[in-house]
Length: 275
Image 1 (cartoon, one colour):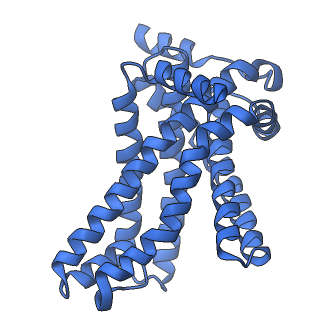
Image 2: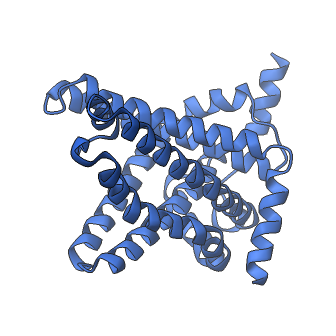
Image 3: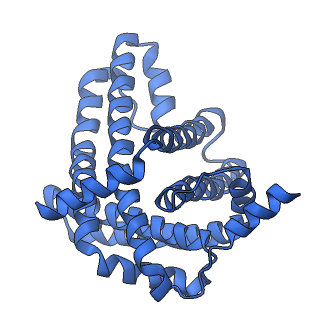
């Protein structure tokens, strides 16, 4: 209970006066990524080479956009304002974001595949899968904060693991509601989708499925769209304490476990203003 109070207090303090802006950035960037990713499946032949290439390039750009959003949280913990110089800096760091993001994505996919092989019982699989999701959500955030500070490649990974180990209790408490909601979504959203759409259900990408089902049952499509909007809106709310507490954990530990990290972005910002 005490840890929960600590998490609540620090989350509230970090989000003070800027919580809606941070939520809006997280929500709209995430929704934009989902919409155009799904839209590609509607507009292109998913079995074609062109789709595979474009989809891969887009997935790399998605990593850059999400890491840039995560910069907001490390700026917030330092009571700084996110500006144009930060966007310029993010573009300069894009190659590193892509490489690191790709490695972490492959690692997460590997863990998920192992999970599907060894955990055949549905409820146990959901628990382990949700824990993997939470682990990589936090790990990605810590790595993004390290990229912001110019931490070298190897220390991004080892330092982030060290921070997670040292602050495991706080990070777990901060992510517990996200884990529970994610499990509920994985279990209930597909079942409710089938239940609402009925014969109009299309077992494929979200947007193509919804558009095809619209001609059969427009009202059902409205209901399922609202269902997904509610689900993802809550997901992004629950991500806020996870990112805030991970930023706080990073700020308290990174000088020791990521010693090459420097806050040189402040100097970049000053240089930009002086030009």
